[in-house]
Image (cartoon, rainbow, N blue to C red; front, side, top):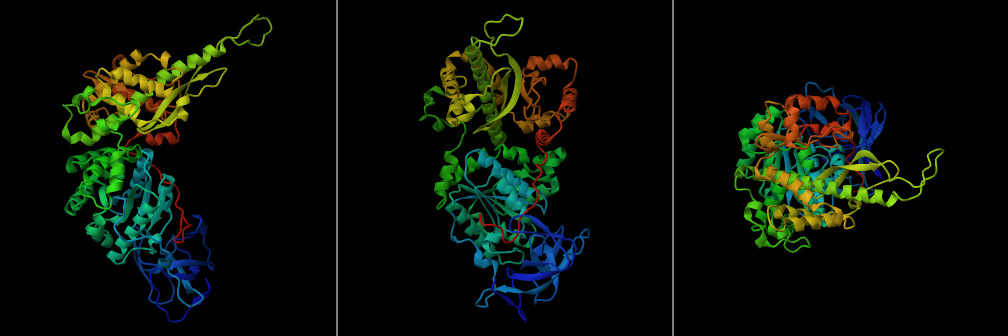
Length: 619
């Protein structure tokens, strides 16, 4: 800042202004450049930006026509004249502009002078839109969860927000979710986008996508603020330039009626819809209504974070390769990295299986319903995690015995009166839970604990190759199954591989195969168990008359918690308790704490505290 521009000047959206706080209202704090929200006091001088605001839950405001007193209409630092406000809102904090901030040459400083330096041509990476019925419908959490799921599959992801009013909260949550590049409309030169020409908003969005591509990102997850009927959003969802660079859309809704109406609007505008999400997920009945009415799967935040959407994204990328132009390379990279049941994934790998050795029935169950294709991919991902858990259990048992055998002949210190001359092997001391990150999602393992020695599985430090598991999935039911399974065990631990019982492991895995062969998925199981109110996350079909109760170790960290693994055990337990009573008992014994967030697939993840400001730190 060199000079203050005062007098008869007409402010423009994005102009920086030095203002004095006159009277506190709704905004009692303002976001600083480091993300901290500083408390305001009457008489404080603050630097904010002029801008228009549209927030149905808070204020509508426009840029002043002069430097007369106005309002602080957003804690991110937006100054304007209030036109309307929600009935539950206090009046905004009143400020008195001192003058526009200018350079030494007398020109005013505007946010557009500091926008990112990138092209506005068609970007080289595709995008996924996060839209919703209204403000606070769950769009940001949906976008952050999608980012998390893509990151867990190894992609470089950009998180962008292209409309709204400048604030740090949405930026911080997607950054915490792991996004490699984070930017919003303020980086495109807008303090807010309300009443901004649509072509300018689209150009800003393309500029941000090209900046993300220059940083090496593979895909962009893009949020558009407010509901589908908001002025700019209504135009953007039909804009050909923007739709031309998008792979598909996730739609967040409050209720089933909003979901149905929004899906119909987006279908009419030419969107490819991946599914629904949002706050409707807090109501299982609302989810059921929306799924039945729209024919689209509902994705909870937890499912998105577990990469449940990734198979659908990969299929869509494969479809678009044939018609894509500038994005062909990125689409090939997204589709080509698929960890799915495709022969091409494993033919030319160390775990390769001859295509002639695999029957099509081993890849696509004939009785799987076509409408459940996307859900089957999630079921197979879960089957892959189950296979890894079983293989890891067998490897750990072999390793723990190896540790005990090496230590049992070491001399132990003599104790008075015991006459011991040689040490005993370290004794087992229960288990502890440990998360193992894999390309198919997190696998929670029960790691053996030794009383007199430390043990940690060696495969935790090795990067798991997805081809090893894909090969096992492809080989199920074939003559090469045992050979491919042995290679997976060798990859996990070549040292103890000869002592792992491959036959026993093979039988355990084959016992899991009917889960995939039934073609059922979490949605089907959830609907089938509505009468029992049992969580589908923990119940999957095993056979015609039994259930396999799958306890998630992250929810039950106590290794002494009883675990029921077989249908026979559940049937025995059912003689005393129904499935509903069993679930009730588990809830009573489940320890309280942050882990309870994942207990329901429809419960939203709590976002971190808001932080940020218009002039955000460099990314």
